[in-house]
Image (cartoon, rainbow, N blue to C red; front, side, top):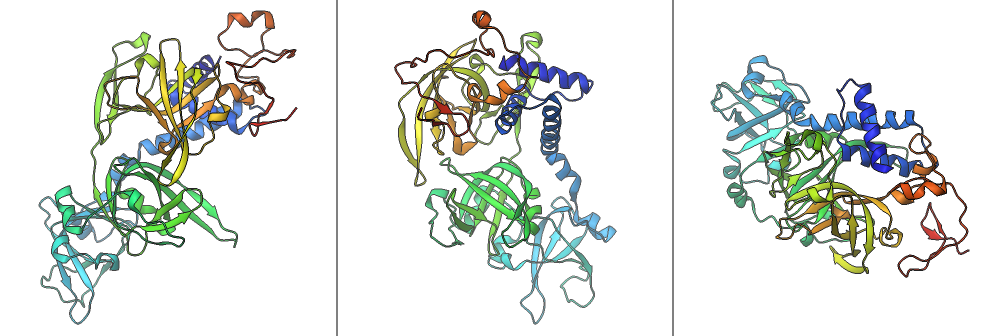
Length: 485
């Protein structure tokens, strides 16, 4: 019932758009499950299509982010010759020298294109870069945006050509390599950050950009509204933290991409009850960026109708193959080592005992699910940092496992799902939205139930038995708590 519904919806979308829109099978399943969890009383096909189209537009916009960034890039030569620069333009230039305006403490960086630039620009350095050693910054490359251009004659430079200047911008990252980063101090892990009751500047950390979120409006009790963007980062110990950018800082997210390594000097640490803490881009925070050029690997198609057709997937900075946008359905038999962000539809056959684990001073639930589909069976170790799944999972339920990871181990059955890494368990058997949405399913008589693996049956319960030795209780579907009757 579930997979047939997704396949039918995918074909319908493809037909309506004349083949221009073919959303990945797993991506579409996740969006549909998310919709049904938000509409437990049912949903119409028109709403489904409208919501899916909006999500697909956002997904396409996100996929085109790199192309958009390339289009925004300008050079020192083009700015010098045209005497103009857009506020959203991205300028990447090498620091040739740093000069001080006579009789002041004002510093100006002399910028030139990294590859044989003909001209130079003078850029007033932002105060946050004053703390860095000048000799270390020279010959490095700055990437910045949110620039304003001025033309002045009153400043005295060693070279008369610096008649075009850029006003300081705080939306800047310093591009460097690992060996160049050493001269700016030690960058540790997120676990070593000291969490105090009040916000403060923490020690320098090195993280990877795991996910770039979209902008959203935040409404405060005092009536003010701000715009926020969440950048999810992860360190080498697999600790995940959110880096929030606010208002005028939002363009900073255009200077790096998923997979890039960020060395953050003096991150602003804000304690938080739900997340323990999160990071912000404070007035003294400096970001170094080691860009990651994603590698693409071509693998054969898994679909029987297109067997052997090459499909391209991205290999991340850890050498893992990212299957988040894989176009076809992934079965358990298809999962191999070094695969990450895999989504799989399966049936639970066993739920192990639950253990408590601690990570980053937060206790979570650890348990093992044994799951199966038409092709194979696997065990999946669940690390539930939110402690919300264990009590609602039983053998026989159909689930959609989102962001499963198969590490590079000798055993291909070493599957993990971590909620701190974006992992989710969509319990399809407990979603009343499936039952209430007439466009997704039709009830079948009790006598025909044995003919289906999954179906909707409208009948009267006359007796309840326990499952696998576990007592059966009445559960309220909205809160998953026993009704006590």
